[in-house]
Image (cartoon, rainbow, N blue to C red):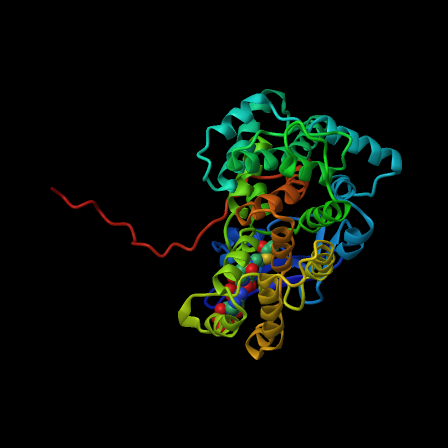
Length: 426
Ligand code: ACO
């Protein structure tokens, strides 16, 4: 807390409302408005443009400066020097693991990577052309049924076991969703492989065949997971917190987060990027596409550009762009027509006054979509991979919330409907 106070005066009301100003480790101080209700007011902030919904020690973002820190560590350093499971440990526990802690954590995640047979049956019951996010959401919600009796959200050990189960089973579930849609047999996790290798093996491997995963592709996949691991109080994480604040089963809260991530303004953007590139089709159409994005009446936006928080550049996009170049050269795909369209779009948008003045830069989804396309992952699976990486972020925020005193989330509203009136007499 600072010793500063904010004072709110309202025309026609004598009382001056005093609000404490709370400091942050870095970033803006916040005005605590919890006391204003006793004066008969609520604050009004649609879209949470100026509202901190909670206090958190996990992730810090400075959108103007393009800074993203997990537990204080810059994302660029984690992406290059760490790996996904170490980043998971960091997000969950607040500190980087010692080599022994990392080995134990990795072993626990592997130990919990197989899914219950009831989940396999649920996945198989879906029509093969169902959207993968619908299947994943249902499969994760079904984990609530598998483990409901064993979870005690007030017990730290029970929460730790639930974290191992979630992080361990997300790659297995994601691969099963893919295999089901392909009409292929599920591949069991192989504990001799790294986290990313295992995901790629379960996705692209064939039953009865030994794993055959490229190290460069596995490294790129792991980096995609690291870069998506957490992102502060975004829509899906806020959903997980709000849902979890009722004391619900954590797998049910994560399923709510998956539903939120699905939308094109959030995690669905990387899928939308590829659909847009396919629709553009040839280099000749790029300029008319940019013109359409600038025309308000078209209702069309350039997918993969712009961000609610980053108004300068997205630090994840910088690392993702570099990974994108590495993967394309490893696969010999630098001259793919769709990638040429993406590069041209990026160049035009970065030089166009409309995009410059509105601070619309390529976001992480622009490049991750291109990498995943090059790896051979179908477009509809992109958001599933985002969910796989983000599961740890959702869980860390849920865990942070339930391990301290918390209240059920209950926003209020500004009512603009009809005043009270009587039902017409008959
Ligand atoms: N293409 C064209 N114009 C755009 C775009 C875009 N991609 N994004 C924003 N604008 C324009 C808007 O029309 C608006 O113009 P105006 O000020 O003249 O009215 C201005 O830029 C600000 O747009 P808002 O929607 O107010 O910005 P907001 O911060 O609310 O939205 C968002 C951010 C949703 C990401 C938006 O930029 C967008 O729709 N981008 C495309 C979808 C996308 O890539 N989403 C991925 C987000 S990253 C993630 O989830 C990991």
